[in-house]
Image 1 (cartoon, rainbow, N blue to C red):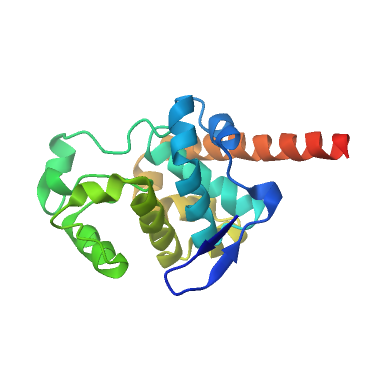
Image 2: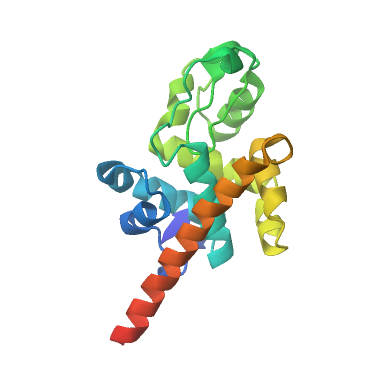
Length: 196
């Protein structure tokens, strides 16, 4: 899988780490099969753009996506008292693979990626835009360096602020999804080596 980043650079993900619908289904047990197939190209592009080109990086990305989107079942956060507290109110509630929130983030990522997220916040929930937003969000926070250093809690904190400090079970659930992705990749690699 290759993806051209916004700066024109091409990133390649090793074929054994390609994002497939089968990997998404194995990593996200609550995902609907059709949804997994629909989101496969976008998540694959996100992984390439975010340089998730190692097993550890890819499975962490998948674990974070699984938790943030409830296994791709909640691409748009439901309106609640919590969403009213976001800068700009519920209009700028969580959307996309990282559940982008707050007016300031919609403004920042919209400007950077050439999207009118202020006038049309629903764009953040479209697969191709959601992938670009999360790849930029992931990269901006130095997440790959944290993954490479084994700082799992740091990754969760980078993606969702206080999610690790106030609700440790959220972090553990993210790591559970990460572990499902890791088991799927390794099972696939074992199956391929047995055939060879």
